[in-house]
View 1 (cartoon, rainbow, N blue to C red):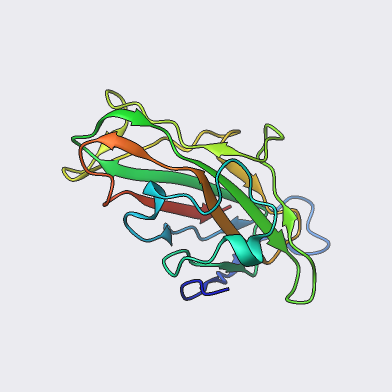
View 2: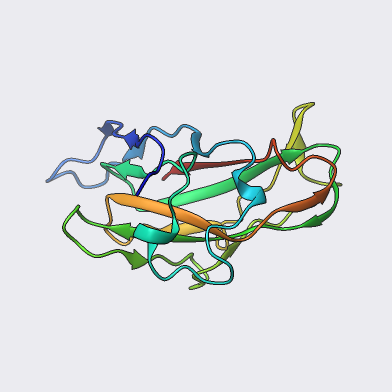
Length: 173
């Protein structure tokens, strides 16, 4: 697999001790650059990925290695002048270690294909990009105990405008 450099997430956990009656725990959370600009505009494998090792191979896709957390939330940044958008669809895979097989991950709605839904009138903008909302169910991928995560595009982003600056971001919760 000729993917990009790993993204390693290993924040400290605060709170929660054995014996405490109630003590909330919190994890630090930062935006993670999961895909380089433009990669959402091409597919890794059309319709369905069945072998992430051979089908997810583009260098701008960065495997995610996590030391904590149970959910990966995702959002897409896309050109703020884009219109006539075909929303991209992705599939996520995880494993607990290098010697384990890949398994398909699901979102909170039990779906294995995640659609990043755009709303050009409501999505938050920063002057260059607009950002899709990270739906609490549709864009929350259960890590299922996995510590290594890869992801690929099965339906490419298509727009009237510029699709080459679109990015995929995520955060672990």
